[in-house]
Image (tube, rainbow, N blue to C red):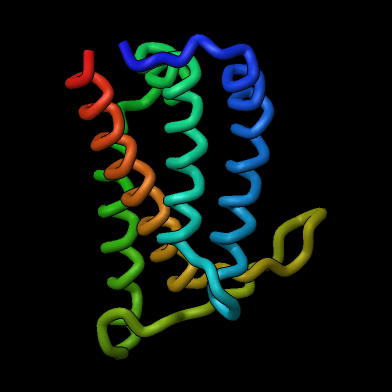
Length: 142
């Protein structure tokens, strides 16, 4: 079993997991105008779960995920593909970016755009793919 029996590693994995996930969301949302985006944010999120996997083992990491990583990757592929379709209905080329500004009660106007939806799809695909590989390698080690 790939699991380090280190008090420091197990403590830091629990502390760093939420911080890394928060930073990955920051990188995801920042990536349209500055460096970042779905790919690097997905790698950061996957690294958080891999650190947890090293500290507590594969079964604990799978319980924390609650969803099979292959399912996460598949959902990401579907979301990324669906983000490319709306421009077709407006007579625009495939993958053209579209922005909507709906008014939400108590919040006000928000921006919904196809590039962000595509980045979310990339994020989920990268997280699912990297975790699938990491879990497979960790289980093969056992």
